[in-house]
Length: 121
View 1 (cartoon, rainbow, N blue to C red):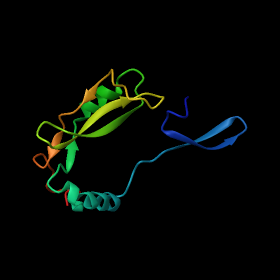
View 2: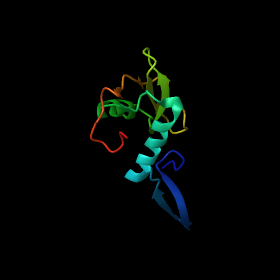
View 3: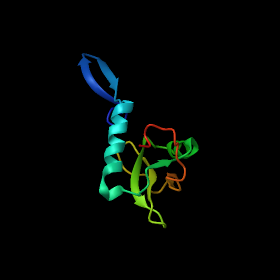
View 4: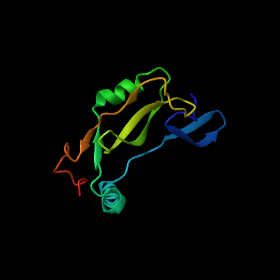
């Protein structure tokens, strides 16, 4: 197992046994709401895209590429000057897999929003 490219970090080594702990990217709803609010209140982003939604098939298509370990998201502007995301696979060395699948055409919010979401402040 390549520890550098995995979702684990070494938290201790006891002779031959390596103790692994999965890195957590989880945050609470309160933290998420605060972060979204800071974005929404930033004058640079007023009237810009609030969220981008991709179907799971897009993530699966990227992750199913040989050698893909994760997905990187790049902020971009589409032809209508709307903020969007470009998704690209990332290999074990942390390199963008630009010769593979590159994805966009996210469902943008506003327009495609969950109006009941506490994240749409």
